[in-house]
Every structure is written in structure tokens, then in C-alpha cells.
Image (tube, rainbow, N blue to C red; front, side, top):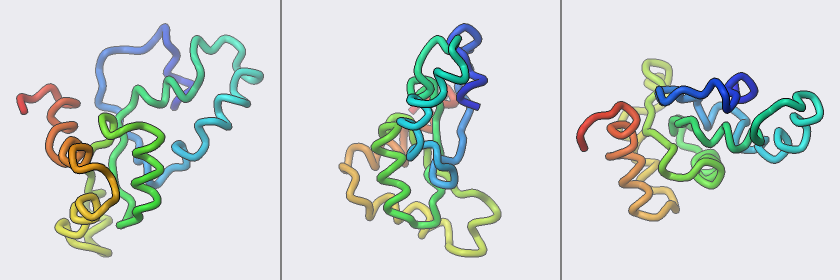
Length: 127
């Protein structure tokens, strides 16, 4: 997906939310930057720059490590609270799904942004 979103074809339509905590994208950004240019020499920017244009959901089945990795890789302003409905309900309640974000070591203002503002910004809603 990152290699398909070239700078010359990027549109301002933002709702593209790969699941950060189920994918390995946050952990592979440096590898993509190192290896992709040799295989795709016409890239207008590093893959990590393109990847940071997306929004990512927080579904991680309570994994603090996954949430921290996504936060460090993409920043709080590109994480959106997610529930993975209905799959996650077999493992935890909605309360648990969002509580683990509250209980994370992320700064309080970043938790607030993730839980209460980013989805509205992404969808162009008043917040």
C-alpha cells in the first residue's frame, strides 16, 4: 500500500486506516526506507514518509508494546481508536479495548487526542 501511494498520485481524501498493531509496518519503516529505493528507484519520497500520511487504528488486543510502537512510529495525531468489530468481542469488551489506551504510558494529551479527536479530524467532523 505504501509503495502504491506515490507522491504524484496522493489525494487529500484521508480515510485510509491500516491496522497498525496487526501489521508490521511500524517496525519495518527503516527497512522499507533502506530497501525500497533500490527496487523502486522512481519513488518521490521515502516509504516511511508516505506511511506517515495514513491513519492507523489502535486495535492491538491490549498490547501495550504494539500501541507504543505505533505511537512512536506514526505519532498520536495519526492513531485512531479502533475496535475491530466484531472480532475483538470474542476476546475483550469495548471497555477493555479502550481502557488499555487509558492505561498506557502515553502522555495524557496524546491519549485524549487518540480517543476523542483524531476520528473527528479524519472524517472532517466538528470536534
